[in-house]
Image (cartoon, rainbow, N blue to C red):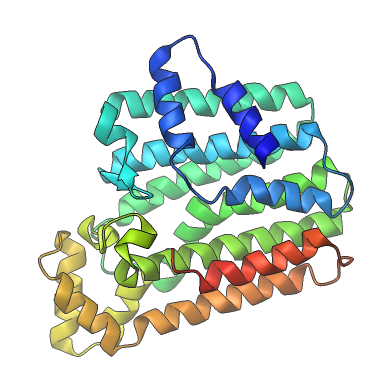
Length: 309
């Protein structure tokens, strides 16, 4: 991962100073580096990790970082990972344009790898992620979205890049199509579990640990699964409160909403779904030979569900 960070910093450089400033702000802003890690762990199962794997991992991180820059503008976020967002510090226009730079730099780096499968996987993934962003935008303030529709948004917006990262590691080290598909399924399941836990932490996490304000999703009118479950399982009075909070956004009813979430065990329900996704992901790669890389993936699946940040 140190080698990946070196590639990131080298590839991030631009003669335009603002790009360097905003890029460094994002890259140095913490984060778990999960997606580039998945590229390396997936590749390591099938052979030695080499410099071109570090390049591929950096490409995935650039794509993820570009989506964060754009997300924060769309969501009007002021804090991420406990620090001020780029749009809060430098303005929306600069954040959008530097996000575009990171996307285009990622594709420049892809071309240098001279692997059409890599291009195919990442071009499809970025397109699906963009569709997920639009789906989420369409569902803002929509209290009538179903659980299935919400899971679809997660699959597109979040889990798709996890899936792509896992598939890329397998492809770049010439895994069989069967093993490639198994790792991709693990990535999709891990990404889904990860986002479901994020949704729970948004309503119950420690602000210092999660690095953002409690109820950020609710304030934006996002109908996350804990809110939807609480609304459907609450008394008519509490259901009306949750519905109105989603429809209007803001945090005026946060305490009442949190009470409804607690009374219906909504967090426990969503966490149980996350555990199921995590277990299904592990089952998908159980047939692979034991190695430090496979063990790390199994441990990561457990971490995704049990974490508090």
